[in-house]
Image (tube, rainbow over the protein chains, first blue to last red):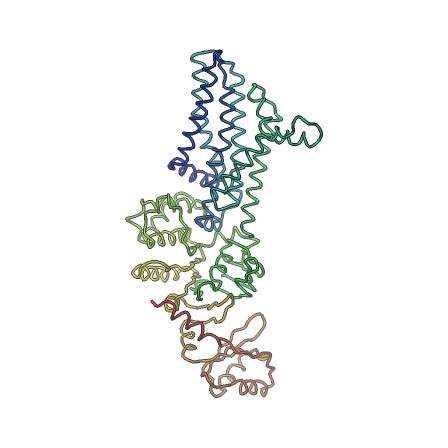
Length: 237
Length: 311
């Protein structure tokens, strides 16, 4: 556990001393701020965050991989992975440590958006339910998105490739539901169930369904597991 | 301390190391000498547990590098050839991180950092960001992290490559000092360097070990001594004097290997003593199990090593 902590702490320090991470945070705030304001400038404004949650999930398709792309790809590029993997460190400790660092940074980013609901409370009477559940959904979604980025960063020493591939996977998974065309049968159900958007809707509406929580946690676990395997396989290639 | 048996490694179809076997005793400083691409780095990466061999077995302190990788990695300090460091971290921050990864306690890390900064003469730079250090100082940081956890075995891949001559001298001195307490395996493609630091030298060429000896003996064979390796079925105590008495023989050493009684015989180049040697063995009633010339291509390799880069 100390190793996980050490790896995570080192990466967190790098996040907070790195312009890249700040740029990501800045864009995140700008885009989500924009989506938040869209709701309020409506002729019949609604004290809700549903547009903000939609904007946040969309922009994270790009920004989550931007946060994770460096984590393992750079180690491979610089060769520091050689010292990391010849230290008495287990592969899962490396992956989990790196993953947690990106999660902490993204949670900090999400934390900064908390002034949006605060504004709603100051100037209106929003329904708190969808706000709580929406934030829970956003955190779960972020956790899953970052795990995909970790996997692609493990697979290549090229940060750009890690970024593009992770964004691609995320994009496909996000919109997968659209691909079914409302059809029926096992394949349609499967694709719908894989789709992230369909699992996020309920959170936005104020519904906390265990099914969706399990979905996002499973996706996260699945991609982290693949990442650990991928790192292991580095030793055998 | 280290046992390498039948080590073979392929990168895809490319054969990097072929059937390499050797042992390193505790406290020994072993030099890997060979031209670039000879298989030095590959062998070191396998010893340190960075990658598994295609075939063969490597044990370090009786732990298998593949099966008990964590135990092996706990006991090794490693300096890769490219000295990969986290360039955005300060020196002490980096050492602290590496210490934690090696499972050291924070108090122990603090004390050891003070020591290694002293040993590697990094005093004035301990707060500097690594990316701003010169190549020579980065090398020192690399060595500092390798010795930080006081490993039983130190593996240094080309520790003096790419740094200026004064620093080369200092680094060699440092390795010599370290070699007094630790088992060291280092690689180099510079012959004089290896003979200066190492108590034993392995010459590796195109993935095979072509010679193994002390630096002094290697220098001798350079001066035109040839070697024969014979395996004799007979009591070593009696075989040795008989072999030594063969006219023309300079030196005989007995090196038993896994129930095989092997002897290395040195004699002046140009003579063919195979006949005399075999006759003297057989006439004593022992059996001659094998007889082969070793180190024939040595001169060739030496030429490469010595002309390639001088001190």
